[in-house]
Image (cartoon, rainbow, N blue to C red):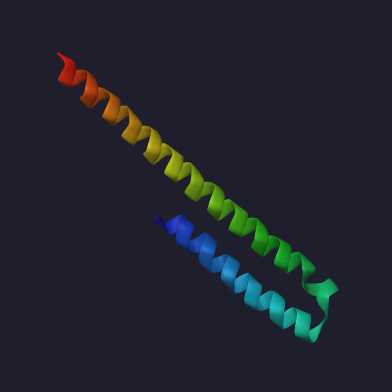
Length: 73
């Protein structure tokens, strides 16, 4: 896990806590933007993780294809 991923996940969790506090003290309408920003950060985190998994999967497929063609020679 890269530093950016850790920061995104931690900031999202912190914003959920802040949003909960705002909901209790000021109400849902005051905390709604904070929750939406937390959700955006979570989506961004998942987007980065999915791209990383796809990249790793395509790299392993290419390595498998190369090793199979070497065995045929």
